[in-house]
Image 1 (cartoon, rainbow, N blue to C red):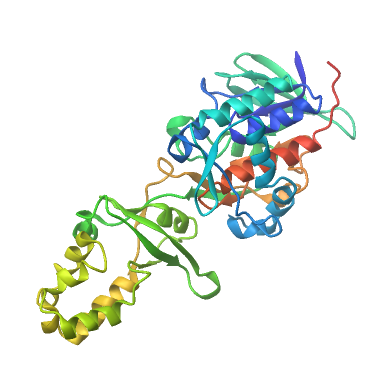
Image 2 (image 1 turned 135 degrees about the vertical axis):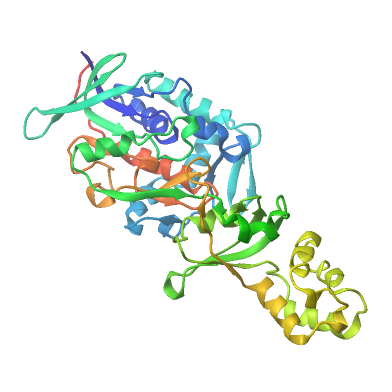
Amino acid sequence: MNTWDVVIVGAGAAGLFCAGEAGQRGLKVLVIDHSDKIAEKIRISGGGRCNFTNRLLDASAPQKHFISQNPHFCRSALSRYTPQDFIDLVQKHGIAFHEKHKGQLFCDHSAEDIIQMLLAECATGGVEIRTGCSVKSVSHQKQDAQATHYVLETDKGPVQTTSLVVATGGLSIPKIGATGWGYEVAAQFGLRLVERQPGLVPLTFDGTAWAPYAQLAGLALPVGIETGEKKNRTHFDEDLLFTHRGLSGPGVLQISSYWKEGTPIRLNLAPEINLPARLQEAKLRSKKLLGNELAMLVPNRLAEAWVSQDPALQRTSAEVPDKALSQLAQTLSSWSLTPTGSEGYKKAEVTLGGIDTRDLSSQTLESKQPGLYFIGEVVDVTGWLGGYNFQWAWASAHACAQALPATVKS
């Protein structure tokens, strides 16, 4: 029987980082992953350059960038391992990076740099990594009042450990190997689960209703986007992208994590412009068609799509009735529309929900089942777009690695 201090299932961001940290503490660590290629989510992230953290994350109040049924759960780990801590590691490995937008840090060269850094950290800690290795079953046996013994039956033979770390991610992007294995293990040991759904995902609309806007596919523009009412209202100022089936882009991905099925989202398609005033001004001074005037305030294709839907707008600016002009300004400034769904896990960047944090320690990420830990995306902690989810992976992995006990002498 192969015996280890720690067995980590999942060779992604959280799993590899936890392994390297634990190994460098002197623990005997094994990482298992069912895929032949490790860290695929890192490899494809950020357009292949990996948005590895966000320097604007507020370590004193990190929960404002995260979604969870228990928003304050993430504070402990995120305040103890900050974006600057990870930046220091990146710099130690000589990886060049840049800030792209709103604190988002990307590799200059390739996401592969981050993967190689994590592997180097694992090598320093003497970590063994087994890829193409599936776990068929997990069982446990209580040794005494203090210790629980786990046996994992894998297709490369059984392994044994007193500390089992589940770092298998969520359900998003199944084509790179995402599964619900982590949730199944949690359920096996009586842990509660928060309902899962796609997060950071494009939104879709009914084909017929969307027909007037399908022609805008490929158009991107900065917008204000929001959903919810009163204290549940959430707003982002980000870019929007029209697609053939609906809306995407950073703004939509952000709001999708807060959007509830059957409720509307609201868009300000000209957030920097006082449309009522500018259109009224055009009415008083211009002899051009309203569509031409509107195209000076918003992208031309957008102006055409709106004007083409209302004959009252297909005139010179001076001839457009005040009511129609006011309605146009109102619609463009607060366009309310209700998505029919989303592109689902195949396009989602993360999974909302997961292991209920009521059954985990915020200090160690150990569950109420002794010796069983959950880190990264599998937990009910989901960050905003822009490097926050990677920072949760690093921080939760670090908290776990520092807490793992060394109990087995190799």
